[in-house]
Image (cartoon, rainbow, N blue to C red; front, side, top):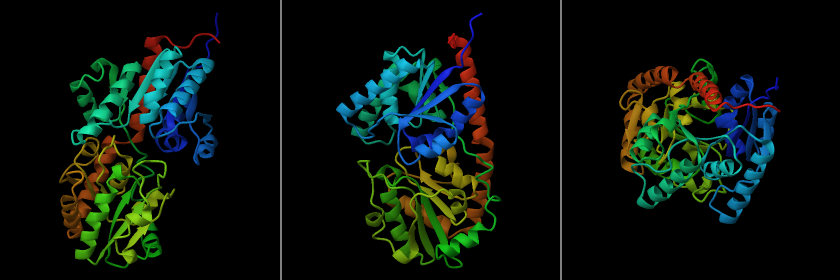
Length: 392
């Protein structure tokens, strides 16, 4: 009888930092289920961290911004890798990997090519040019992927409406967080210590934002809104946490970004690994992003009992229950954002009520274990239906 080797899977993303924060638990779950999994990505500062988790990293030189020559070289490198490793499943994530990996997988003859949509690149509120370019990219990815998975239920409805892919080839996977790590009780005692370290005085209200420092996250609107809030409420402080993205066309300089804010009441911490504790230093969390999948930062902050202010866009709407766990505002609009933040600043009871409701909502709907169980079941069904896993 022919021996059967483990199912070989390539989880492809543009950067190692995406593997670290978006996929490491997915890969660890697949490894525990007996799959042979490689993380295929561009190397960065998170590569060694991923490898220390016991995940094999295959380095492929991705360029995140559009670059036809570089993208062609990357596609060829992916094709060569997929052919030599003879993966049974190639599964891509993030926009650039989604553009190149499915094509390379098809050309290499990979039996199953998947792509997870971490938020469609076009939104109902996208500017016309952005909408057209985003749609072209999504249709390209969908054309070469055998099947799509989506983190967002609303994105699935949109995909069906625009005929992105046959509805029987698009499945819901969801997104979630470790609700045991992001729990108010985990960081008991940290709030007073951290607020003291940040120079927060008794009675001050800290409005925080976490994310990559890019314009798409809504940082420009956030800073402008906070300039007005802080001018009207001397008891308010701004806390920004997140890495710079110098290789992105919409990357922002933290010094220039916060130049109009009162420096004595403004803090930028850059990238931090103690994010669960840092949420406890905040009283309100904002994310006025232009585009999201199902944003982890909103889930994390809500799980920590913070009231939310977020853009009224797909993805954010799944996390935020408007008027119950937070407030939704129109994207790219400073005044509605400012008004929502002021409403929460001035109403401590409302902040507490929304924070409590938010924690319950996240625990019920966005527990990472639910997502991992769906992933494991999806792969088992995929392997069975596609009859993957031949001899060595």
